[in-house]
Image (tube, rainbow, N blue to C red; front, side):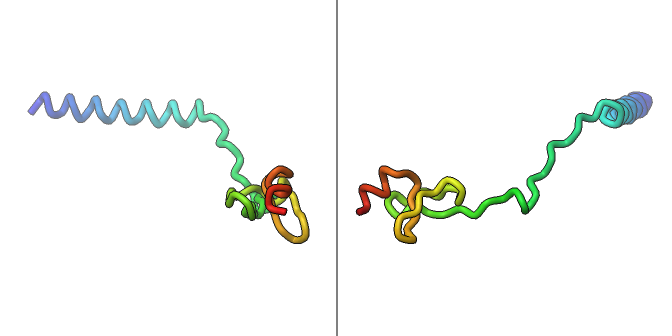
Length: 74
């Protein structure tokens, strides 16, 4: 019975130490991506890879991941 009390006491102390350490030495959490920062993904007509809209190559309303695929599809 005494051993059980000792184990419970050690568990409580360990949890309290963990909580205090986490409280006082917490690192700042990384910023979450805001919806304003997210980009629409477009699929390359040639290979099917999805790329961010800011990186696509447009030719006649068709989207490509690079100039080479735009030329190969012509």
